Amino acid sequence: MRMHCKRDASHTMTYDYGGTGHIWDEGVITTPPTYDEYGEKTLRCKNCNATKTEKVLPTKYTFTVTVVPPTCTEDGYTMHKCNEDDSFSYKDNIVHSTGHRAAKRVIEPTCKEEGRTEIYCIVCGEVSSTFDVTPKKDHTWDNGVVTTEPTAEKDGVKTYTCTVCNETKTETIPRLNGSGK
Image (cartoon, rainbow, N blue to C red; front, side):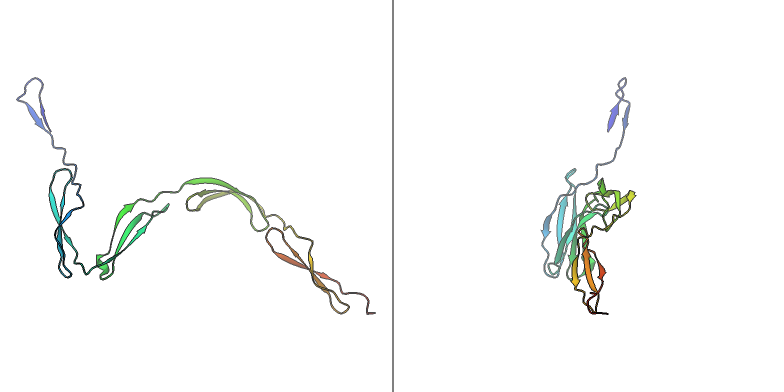
């Protein structure tokens, strides 16, 4: 940029702000690769029309492409895995991690777990903090089922099942008193 003095046009100052950097297009194959020989691709700058060339791998190299989406904590990318020579494998199209999205939830106590309030990520479920912990509740037992009938020789068994978590407990039913023993 050149600036001129308002009082005397012969006084000038020149400032160099540097370029905006090259922004390359996708390029055009100028020399197609063969099975064993490299080809060449010419790329053109969208800002200044400068050009540069890049090698194009021989066609014997094939790639398996896998898109890995970003997570809350890890960047996403496209993986190009060379099937013939891993040294040609590369990642591109990097997408930055999304970061956690926090929310609060209240979990009521049950007979299986304590109650609590949590701050968690609504995307990945990671819990960042827990507070207001309340103790577990007692089991809620059903009326029970006789699973082994008592006899004069042997005690019986009654099995109760928790209607919330399906845990079971047993109770002894005394043997029958009718055999004269």
